[in-house]
Structures are given as C-alpha cells and as structure tokens.
Length: 132
Image 1 (cartoon, one colour):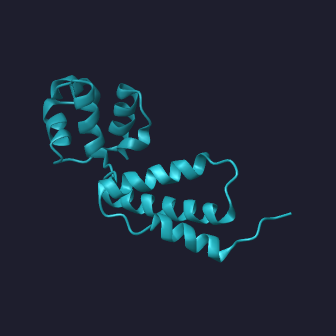
Image 2 (cartoon, one colour):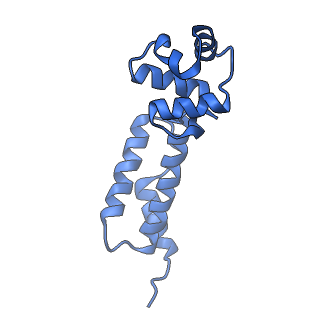
Image 3 (cartoon, helix red, strand yellow):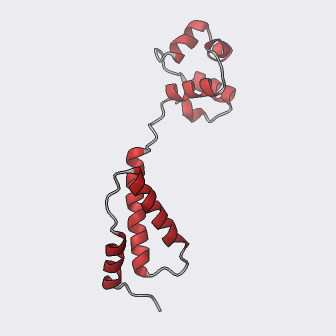
C-alpha cells in the first residue's frame, strides 16, 4: 500500500527545519547535514522524502554558483598538464615541433592543430579530445 502525502506533516517539517535559499557556507553545511540525516533514515515518510529532495536542490544550486568548475579550453588543459607534469616548454619541442611553435602554442598565440592534439594526447597519455 503506497504511503500518502500528508500536508500537515510536511508543514510541520518545514516549520521545524525552515529550508530556504542557501547563501552562506554555514547554511550549506546545515542543509547538507540535514539531508544526510534524512538520507540515512531507511523509513523516510513521503514528507521527509519531499524535504530531502528540496534540500538537495538547494545545495546543488548553491554549489553550482560557488564551486563551478570553469570550462576547460585546450590551451588551459595543456598548461595544466605541463604544470602538473613539472615540464618546461623545451620538453615539448619533440612533440609540437620547433621552439617557436611550442612557445606560440603554450602562450596562446597559436591554436593546437589536430595533429598536435594527437601528439600531445599520446605524450601526456590522455584523451585527444582534451586538446580539440
């Protein structure tokens, strides 16, 4: 038998927890703690399920606004991989061509060609799509 949604019970939950748009880290942490508490309750009521869904939406909205990952470009990915691998521009001469070409690519003055993308992907052992 499916459980029915009780508006009075939901109203009582809303009054008790007072969910709202999250604007600070403290509010976010409180919402996460409450969501985790509800999530671990194996016998959630439909009203608790609705509150949990609301909290998840509020937390996701806050985190998308405050922790969004900037869109990676082929150039930024190359710079990240160079730094992460502790390489210097001259280490890419054999991969991209001359020192001048490497300098232009690394400094963003020249785009990464398809053949260079393939060579970089093989060199860094990553997907070629990161450079296209």
